[in-house]
Length: 417
Image 1 (cartoon, one colour):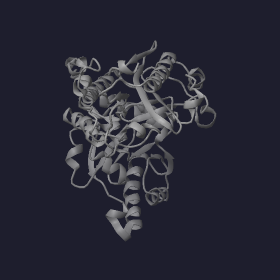
Image 2 (spheres, helix red, strand yellow):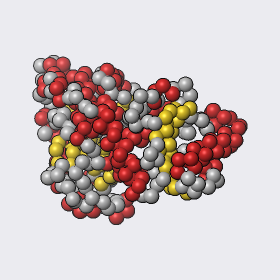
Image 3 (cartoon, one colour):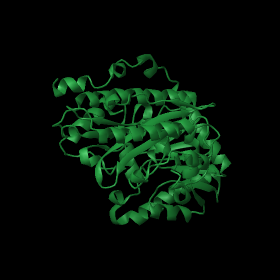
Image 4 (tube, one colour):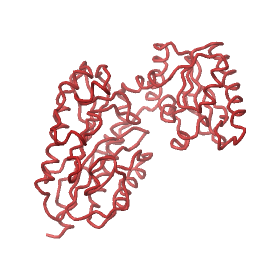
């Protein structure tokens, strides 16, 4: 059997190629999706006593309105595109020349030109530009919410935030209410999540089919990216595909390394996919042409055990602390290189909540309640510090009224189990 024959027969992936296209393409009421999300944000504003919000995070603007424009660029250049939101008004300030992109959305009452207040836009006049932005924004806030209103803000230039505070508003952080709003998904949102996952699984199947010793990591990773974009996804948020010794420790980005024979290849999808929803599962593959070694199988089976144990304890109403106490105990030899989280929320990106390992909870953890409607990603990375390869596995699930529903369907590797 040649290397190529072995790889083609290594796992039963035919079902991925023939995914239920009816489900993946199921009709989605995007007006209902947008209305639910905007209602969630406004409900949390009221709960936290926030009169107005200035959303600058492009993912949060998209969550609240459904509009998008150069998400990565505008995340780095702020303020250049922002949403001023109250209980009664939604005014999108769109990037120069792009006002047409915000028109026609029932979630946006008005589109105005944004005033870009960044150093690259204003140069040595940046302080003047920031004050001008604050005066303009302050006038709008007084009109909509009154003098001295409580205003939630996100990431923004320090000078712009200080200047806005000088306009007489009480500024608070918008992170908590927005993250809490995003945490609970509607039934229509879940159709978006499913569509994103099905497209990503097709992309991972194509990546899997393309695995050959002799390819670079970059060449292999590009297969996933191409497939995701071709199916209407947005972008891949990280570059987490690596091989051989570069699988340990984790978080080594895809590079020019050539994949060697019989190496492990670890992938975390991190896809901002269809409708802007995050598709986040991890798999580890074997490059062939020989069978995996016993050491490789031990790593894989250990990671598989961790993921499935922790999926098995998840239930609605469980506190984050109780989850940490019941979560799988990481063997000592793998503890130093463990993944920093046990599980995390997932929506339009990775999001609230973070669920920590028992050993990390006293220093890093916080409490809360696992609720129906949360989508969670259950994580594992297993490797010994300073020794050999590592295995990354992860599953995406929905918390239901009675337990969990598995969302990510890409198969595990029988040869490694």
